[in-house]
Image (cartoon, rainbow, N blue to C red; front, side, top):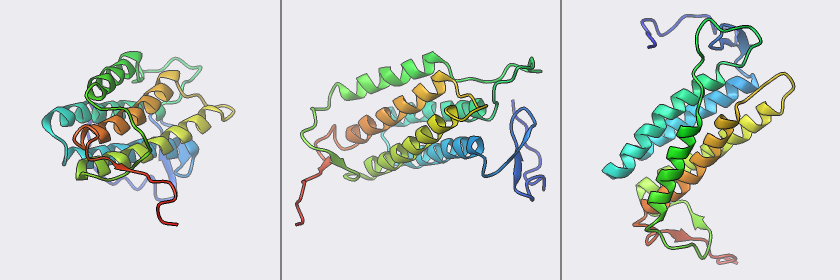
Length: 190
């Protein structure tokens, strides 16, 4: 368990931060940007929970915990040296739980006939915000994985991809199972 007894350390005053393995990186480093955006996604999910019903809030609570796991995963780059501790990694069962939740929510939602504009209910709007931030985290993770000398686990990438799908379906569920979705009307304001 993590113990935080002092919030400021002054170690980042010159624009660096420590990864979980102790190595220092610039706060503008792509790995730091990636797990920082995962943290931003988590904050958006927390905001959405304020407006969610009990069923959806429970799903989002599990996701918030997973997002801390994902942040720890991304903050601990793989090493050729044996670690002093077992690094926390996102696992396939977390991806599968998202798929199960997507299927459960989507079962009562009719198919779309147009793209959905973010809005409708407060919960739906907040879930759309979380979805877009999650997509940014996913793009950064893909970029990080493609960077020479960097590695991102396949499960971490799958989790982010599935999470954005979950957040979209959840936004529709929060809009009375799609009945209150605000649909895009192409060229409506020409």
